[in-house]
Length: 411
Image 1: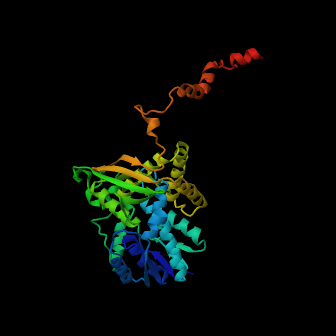
Image 2: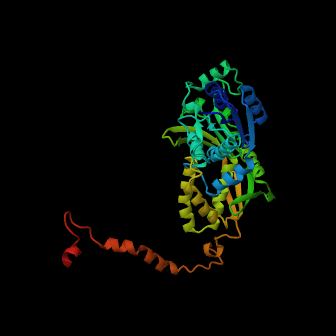
Image 3: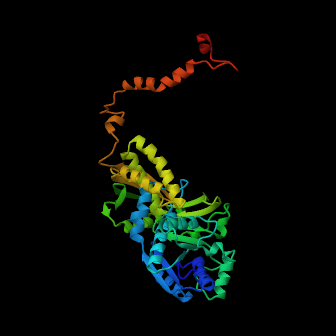
């Protein structure tokens, strides 16, 4: 029998209705956990609404520093981008919220936790796999998979009937998840993949058409793969991301319209905004191109892809992900230097890079004065490289049903 529940509460439509629904169904104390991940919302307002709905206690956890240091920057060092588009802002936050759910549940002696994820989304997978890894005996409740409310409109009607205070209305039916690293937007008219997203949905970015007519140039300094400075000025991690969101957003950088392959097998249409993420991803990848060997880059690309898939699929706490962390951390040792970028009307282009660990040699690369490369060496290199193809070309194809002529003669 369940005696106490800790709910991952955001203050949005789903979790507000869930808070009341859990009270009605289980008749036990409900503790609301509000995770501060830099979502830019009035958490005090959300806290008050949770109390009005009937939460026995509202716990607010400031997770911003840990989110950036232990989740966002690890993803950045892995160039974690799902299906070449999604910078995983929401996916990176879920294992951290799951950790906090388990911590609060243990502190409050609760025997169950609850989330507001749907049965067709990714977040249910991320929350529940993480909780299983951290507290295998903890009961997990997922009301949206169980209750009779089939649409957001029905949830709003339920809220009205039970006097649940909401911010969402039927006129603005979008589902928005936001944190320091980016924004995820879905539902409403966005469910039609042919329809252009209306400008009203965007939270962080100016329309590229309305962005400044002159480009903005940035210089970002990295140290062991971690961004430290913007234009020579050092920032704390949270402030650095906020600054790049401001600059990138003003230039229309970071918008993504993505047809995405969800973990559960459904294709979904997602709109993302990640100005800082887009800028840092391009800059970090370029710094790696300058400082890592060809073989390391080739193998790390495979690791990066797998790493992004593990994050997306909720496997943050898996042994494989932890093992890949060791490899990625090792590769970042010399990813130190400065990258220069040009931001212009929605585009972000790397235009310069330098590093004390640069593997680029102008003396080897130049075609002008100072060239030290011995071009005569190329002849032997090409001969060795092409040798297997020469051997293959000299062997005549076998006749149908027979053996090669040379092999027949040797018999």
